[in-house]
Length: 296
Image 1: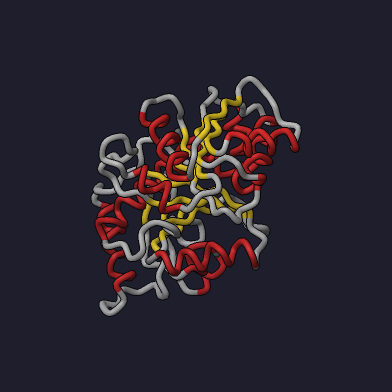
Image 2: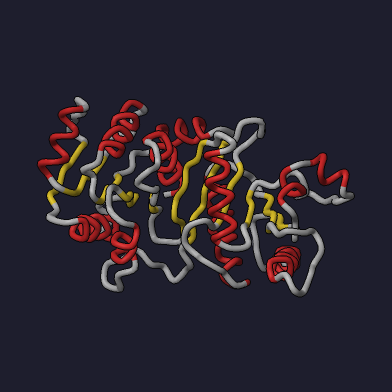
């Protein structure tokens, strides 16, 4: 499966409405243009009304399925967008040109936010040259140093996302520096616990085996050389990173050194959240939107 497949699947689903906070942004407009070409039409664009209209006119983007709502500030745009999703007036929340903290403050609002009681975590789907399928990575953007119970929920969020994108019984590799449990390396201890919890039915819908070094998780040849067997070694669909630092470095390495294409969402809320970086390309925003639509 490729990210293009995810995009085509999203275009073929029942139409979803996307609320974009601070949509007065050229990359957002380009993403909207590309989405409309695929038949993804329904957008609620919130932000500086004059700025949004100017950018849409420059890019020759129009359509009755584009609704524009004025917001006097990024904080107002975030509030209006989150309230629209909370009220079921939109199906997906998307970040435009505003700081993540501003949007997340509204997402976590106790009155009208999108909290469910589950942990929120970032799930990225990468298409990497020379790799034969999508590889999911979690969590690279939300949870700094998750403990075991948080990793259980982060895993569950990633498994649900991968499953909705068509991965049957995802294989999860909790990544560490080594394959053996070392009490002085917490990542290996957590990985062993997650593996045992999965085998006892406490974590369902996936196969977990770890700890695994990265090479063992993704390379059958490396696994064979090191004598590591099992159904996950060399065949992982989901890489559960030990902490956000390791995950974020790996994420950016795939983009800048390996030429990877990526889509990503925040899972665990009452609706999918597209929380791309302001520096991400329109293509990455489009793939992220497609992921959100498929998991909504």
